[in-house]
Amino acid sequence: MTYYYLIPNWFLGFDGALELVFGVITLIIACMALRIYQITREKNIRHFSIAFFLISLSYLAWATINLSVVSKLAEGVSVLSLESISQIWRRGLYGYMALFTAGLSTLVYATLNIKRSDIYYLILGLPLIAIAGSAQKVILFRLVAVFLLSFIVHHYLEEYLQKRNPKTLSVTVAFILLLISNIGLIFSAFYTSTYVISHLIELGAYTLFTISLLRTLKKNK
Image (cartoon, rainbow, N blue to C red; front, top):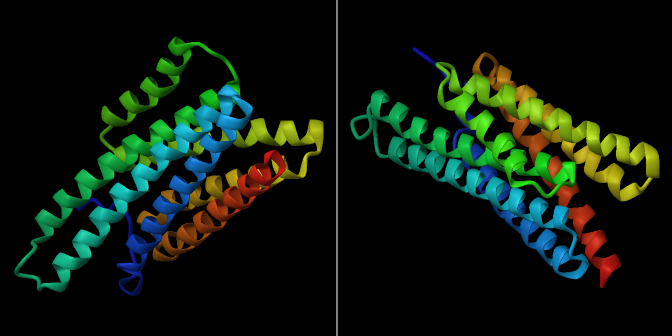
């Protein structure tokens, strides 16, 4: 039997609630980035907004599936078989993976600061095709996420070292936390604690993103 994640019984339901929170936070981040774009008209900020909107949709899809599974389980074991749980999880996972990968690919495109749709096509299409064609979709998805996030972290770290901007440092740390979280989720198929810890680290990452964008908005008003 294939396990996507090992979730502690006490955390079942809380993870869906956290993912719902992530969806709301990332939607707020997308809206704030859009507001900054309307002020500055910087193309990379617009792509940043689109990226977080896609990530928001991914979390909302994943949270909906998780909470649906929990609600059905609460009705009794006769209502939902293990096979049907697996089908529900797969649908949620595939939607989550596609949207989250699209969001990260858009972030990579934003960091490149170029205006070529063919480059975006490659950055977006190749990871999605690789994941779709893999027999181990979840593992490859996390590896792709780690790879894309490592590129983003490298970009922002270099930018911080060059300019020493505190806001850039905050965003860099947030992406580092997101990278660590995704690395942890690779091992959550074997250890229940990594699933919980990874969710908490993600919460810290998105909190930092929000604080950084709020400061930028305040400065540009």
